[in-house]
Length: 268
View 1 (cartoon, rainbow, N blue to C red):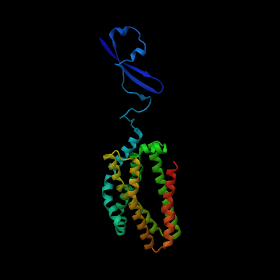
View 2: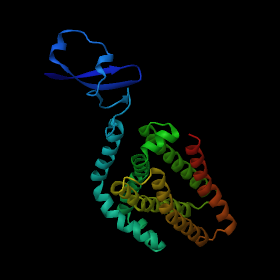
View 3: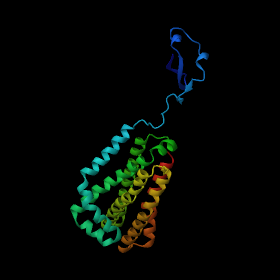
View 4: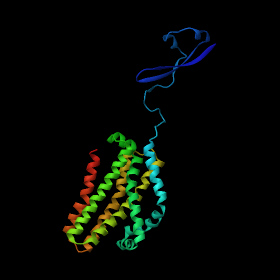
């Protein structure tokens, strides 16, 4: 009568499971290792020690907690989202609609809350879609990348705020640059919305590479940014500033901060 048993042979780099059939009479005595290899011996699953087995991934609790907190934030401020998004979309197609939005103080305050949520959205959505790419290419822990990305956006926003304050002081015109700042809020919100289909594409088709999704997000944001540049041109020229001033504004307040942010991310 044969008895089946499992042997575990390990060293510092690997582990092998070996199933052996041997007579019951041999259980009471020692047998040599060479005698275990026979036609009935088979290797079940070799894998490196310390590596992840196929189909299993260690959950990232910190990243999951951050993502869960973000969705809870969406639920808490759902009223602001529902109330302000239609007005924000209308302002995308007409400058008059933007002025109407700013005239309604309560709606403008709701829009400001949605703008902050949109700033949080971009780091969260990129980290969700490209966590493996971030780890492999940049060697950064994904939650740390999320925090650094969010802080970079905050720093970019503060820099633009200071630039607008400086331009307002130099030109003694607070209204024009306040409008430019607020219209930027609207376009960031729209940019957050148009990138959401990229996340849906990742959910429905996991075979899409993370790099492809990042490029898809960038190309979907590009038309919104072009519209924003055109709106800023309308506002500046409409308030009787020169075209030369607009070029200086474009280089100093719009292009330079983005170039600095891109340089910071690529240098990680």
